[in-house]
Image 1 (cartoon, one colour):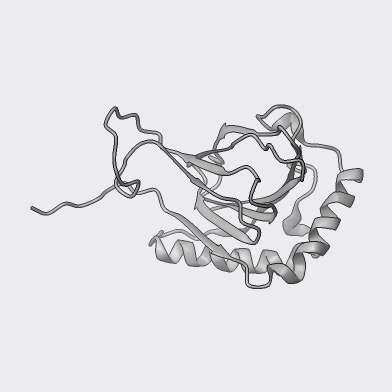
Image 2: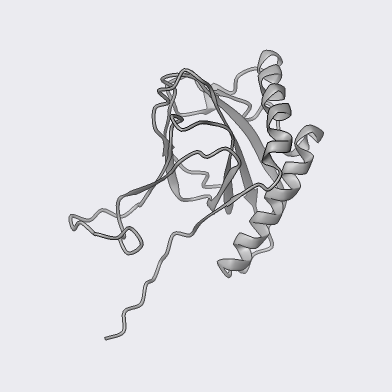
Length: 192
C-alpha cells in the first residue's frame, strides 16, 4: 500500500541567533511606544484589551527593528523555498507588535490578505500564553499522531526568540494570558 499525504499545513519555526543581544532594547522600546502610539484595538478581534500597533505603527518601517526584520525576511524566503511555493513575495508587507497583559487573549482569526505570516515572540516566559493553529476541517475521528491528523488544534509555546512562519490563511488564536508579566509578540504579513 502507498499512502500519500496531501493538502498539508506547513508551519516553520526557528530561533533568532541574536535574540539575547536585541531583546531588552526592543522590549523597552515597545513599552515606550505604547505610551505614544494609540492602541489599534478596534481592528483586533479580542477582549478589547490587547495593546496592538496594527494600522498605527509598521515595525517593518521602524529602524529600531531593522536587524530583526532582515532576519525575519530571510526566514520567510527559506519557508517559501522549503514549501516549494511558486510566488514572488513582496517582502515589504506590514508588521506590528502586541502586548498581552494578564487575562488578554486573541480569538480565532487569519491573515487572509497575506500569503505568508509570521509571529515572533519578543518577550515571554514559561507561563506565557501559547499560540494555537486550527484546522478548517471537522472530523469525528481521533488521531494518535498530529502529523497525520487532518483536524484539531496544534500549539506552539511562545519561547522568547522563536519565529513561527505560516500561510496567512491558516486560522490561529492566542489562549488567555494568565501570567502577571506581559507577553510581547510581533506579527508580520507578506503579500504577493
